[in-house]
Image (cartoon, rainbow over all chains, first blue to last red; front, side, top):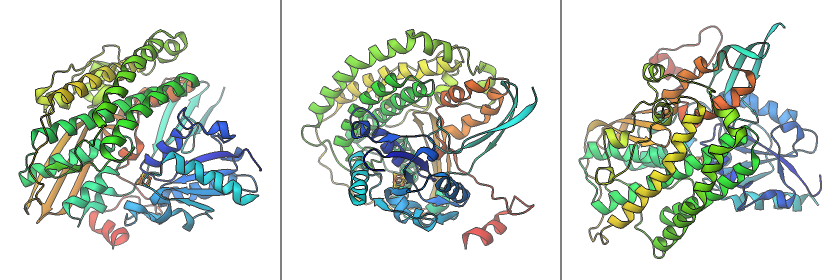
Length: 131
Length: 382
Ligand code: SF4
C-alpha cells in the first residue's frame, strides 16, 4: 500500500453521526476519490478500517472478525469521541470498551462527530507516516 | 432448488448500520425472516438515570445522528412540560427552523440512499451535494453539522449570528432551484420506477394495525403528522400541508418524503418572515421540581416520543419510543414472499434508523435469555 488506500467502514454501535461524516467524505463537496481513496464495502478488500462508535458486547466478536478478514498490512482508525474513550456512552451498561480495547488502533480522530476534513486529514497523515 | 438461509448483515454493502437478517430462501423468494438486533444498543435510557436535566438533553441528542435535533426537541418538550417553562415566540420560531432544516437534510439523505441501493450512483451524489447546502445553514445557526446541542430549557443556545439570514436566503434559493429537477428525474426515470413501484406494499389496514408512523403511514394514506395532531413550537401559526399518498409501495413512500422537502422549505421561509426582533430577556436557570411528563415531536421518520420522571431535576427514569421502533415490526411481513433482490429496496424504503431503534437488548447467556429487572440490575448494572 503506497498511495491509493482502500478503506472500509464498520459501525460499532455508534450513533450514526460519525458514519454520516465518513459518507460525506465521499460526496462531491469533499470527494476523497480524487485523492485515490476508495470506500469498499468488504473489509477483505480494504487496507484501512474506519471504526466509529464505542464497541458493545454484541459487536465485539463481529469487530474482531471483520478485523481478521482484512489482508496483511492493515491499519485501523478510530473515529470520534466514542471510539477514543466511549464519549457520551462510556458508562453504558453493555460496553466492551473503546475500540482499542478490542482491536489495535493506529490513529484516533477526535470530535463528536469529527468533520470530514479531519477524517481525510487523518488518512493522509497515516499515509505520510508509512513512508 | 433446495431451501437455504442467507445472512444479510450486520456488515453489508447496502446497510449503513448493523442489523442482521437471516433470510430463509426458496429459490429466489424469501419464505422466512429472523431478525437479530443489538449491534448498536448503547443503553441510553440507563445512562439518563441520575443525571441533571440539562445533561440529559445532551445525551438524548446522541441517541441518533440523523434525527439528532428531533430527540433533543422531544426531550425539551417533555422537560419544559414538567418544569412549567414556556419559550418566547422568537425561540419557538428558531427551533422550528432548525427542526425543518433537519427534516430537509434527512429526507435528502434518504433519497440519496434509496438511489444508492439500486445502483444509481450519480443521483446519489447529486442529492448529497444539495444536502451540504442544508448542513451549511445548520452549521451557521447551531455550530454543528450533525449534533447541534441547540436547545436549552426555555431558550436556545445562540440567536442567529450575523450574516446568517443572508446565507439562509442564498442556500434556500439554490435548493429551490436544484431540487425540483432532481425530484422530477426521480419520478420519471424508468429504472427508479421499475425498482420502486409495487415493491413492499403496505395496505392502509396493515398500516393502521401495525401502528406505523411518519412517511411509512402517510405513504399508505394514514394521517399521522404530529405537527398537525398535536402542534408544538411554532407549528400552530404556520400553514403547511400534510402529505398523503395512496399507493402504499416503496415509490409512494419516496414520493411522500420528496414532496415534504418543498413543504419544509416553505415552513422555513414562513418562519423567517415571522421572526420578531431579538428578545431582550436573559436566560434563567430552570426551577427545581419533581414530576413526570412526556413530549412528542414529528421526527423526519415519524413520531418520536420521550418520557421522563424527574426528582429535584435529577432524572430517575427515561423512556424513548423512536419512529423506527414503531415501524420495524412490519418488516418481516413485507419481506416474506418478496424476491431476494428487492430486500435492499424494501429495507431502504423504511428509512430505517437502527441507532434509534435499539432500545432493548437480549443477551444470550446459556439457556436463559431473559431476566427479571432485579436479576438484570444485579448482573449488568452494579
Ligand atoms: S463520537 Fe459523537 S457523533 Fe460519533 S458516534 Fe459517538 S456520539 Fe455519535
